[in-house]
Length: 319
Length: 193
Image 1 (cartoon, chains in turn yellow, red):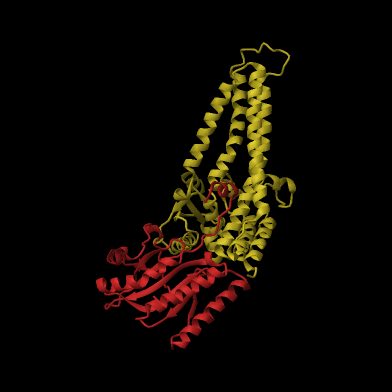
Image 2 (image 1 turned 90 degrees about the vertical axis):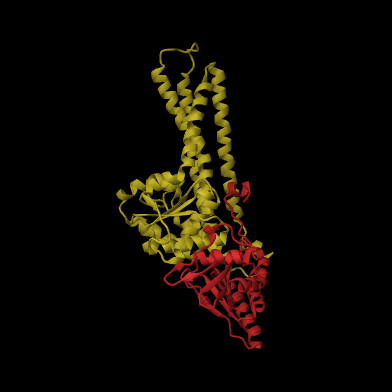
């Protein structure tokens, strides 16, 4: 069927994302196995420490997921808007309405952040609690086609449940980070008792080492996953509107504009990076650094444009 | 969307539902009898064009097809307009009494887009009505949902919500209505309305 070939998913991207998720799962299993092994080796109650950590991390992850819309809106200083209150709000609502009708999605709440940095984000634990937010800088700089492209990208994040997926993926990193702290403070405050096994390394050191390695590996994997999800959202957004070039043009505009604005103002936006249309802050000045790319939440502009080129070819293919 | 699609970040494009559109002629009779609204003979299909040659060819083919059939019967040629959001409206104008022919025209647009693999680009179709007091009313069909909703614009981008709900009540179960009111989006300045 023609329809199937024209809107086919990018298999390479799917496979790479699948492998990344698998590796994250593998790290998790290895981490749990290591904790159990340490517990048996030291005859210590690591199970207690691990349990406390998991409960704490679980609570943290659940909270940030459950209130993700409120947290993000508050951090970005954004306000929910109704279509009747201003021309800009009406325009934003008009575009979102049409995208929802095209994609058969429930309409998310629409918000505007009063900042000149051109950017957008979507958050919320599921489609019924989703918020799509655009900054005033974005509304001022982009025409309707480009804005539609950006919003289609954000709506794809909602459709892919990216906030949930990334929170679950980050769960491991949160556990590992917390375990380092608990083991460390546990040693500081509970330092009185000594292990009977004097020759081996102290248990807290082993715990910290395992947790640190887990954190480092899962951090890199999570960032990799984040970049793949961005590419997927670009792709789905462009397929939804049928206008990959408008999204490309928006990407170029937003990326170059962000680069031109002093970084000082952008620091406040950095915690939200994961949900933004384009990263608010780069780790290094030159975007070409391989190491910087490894740790960034978003793929490079070139990579994103290349993915959209593929969509463009796919859509203009003959019957 | 399935679990695997969520995990792998894929969305399947939504294919349109076309069949429920044919309920319109009989609903129009009910509407006329109950509220005095009659079709103006104008109807339109709204879709998001895809960039590139392939889609432009399909659109041209559809226009030629409609012009040929309406030309034979002495009708007006199809009008093509683009709205501020970049959506294309193909407007077909018939005699007020020819609602069935109008629906057939609209369906021809739908099926050629679907046949060429562009079904997911269809947004909505609008059929215009008017009563003796010159009040405007559009019945809008949402392709992805297979449902209808009424749209009654007043001057200055305001909606007559009371009239919309009244029309929904009058037609009742003759049409499949969109139950989620958040999806009753306004189409200000839609051509043909």
